[in-house]
Image (tube, rainbow, N blue to C red; front, top):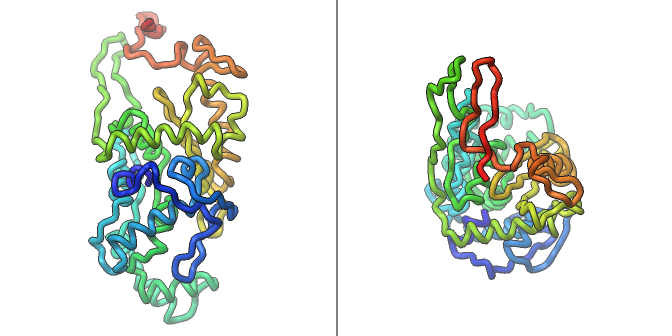
Length: 340
């Protein structure tokens, strides 16, 4: 959302109110735990996970381009930027059954309304909704469920509403932030090797796209996210961690689903690795996923206390070697020689 905003009129100097809530029509969209931090920039909004800051960004674009809720072709820079980062599409990983996720834009909402209006209009007409919430939902859905309103836009701006994202999509998107904007196809296999050690086929890394965004906007987000484990929502879980040596960037999230506990999200990355954790119905991102994510980083870099020892890293030397292992005739496998 920040990259999309910075490429469509907002700037690093923009200041918006991180208020306790934001009024849209007859609904009060509150900030998480109703915290208020005053006028802040995109950097602090990311570090603090300020919902109302991004509500204002989403509402701005809705007013500027799409205030006609029936116009399915209205421009939406935030929707387009999410698609640029690969959300709403399969990554192409070499495993079966990958989910594509969903960016619930105006076209999707119209299609969903057409497919479901018979069900909800029948529920509304018969008055047999199983709860007060569904009774109201069915009535409103039947009347105008195809309309993309301001509430949809502000909900979308923080990843809520009908948006669906897989952990793998999120990992690839943060990898793109780290590498300057290239979307790589995730791969499980590096090579196929016969029983006698002969390399039959190699799978070279393959780029599948490039994020359409300025280099400066990507650099800005990278720099801002360095602050999340230092002074933001992850800071309480990264106390006495060698952040000046292992330069972790991070973002926390608490995805809400009606009738369930929040889903905990944490996405972290540096120049070598991306670590994403999602725990369903687990509460806040930092509170639930933060400690486990920290343990993973400690294992990746051989961290004990404030000491970083590459010899004790999960992969000795920290960075995975480019070469393949050596497959011996007796069946043993020797790791490739490390590059100094």
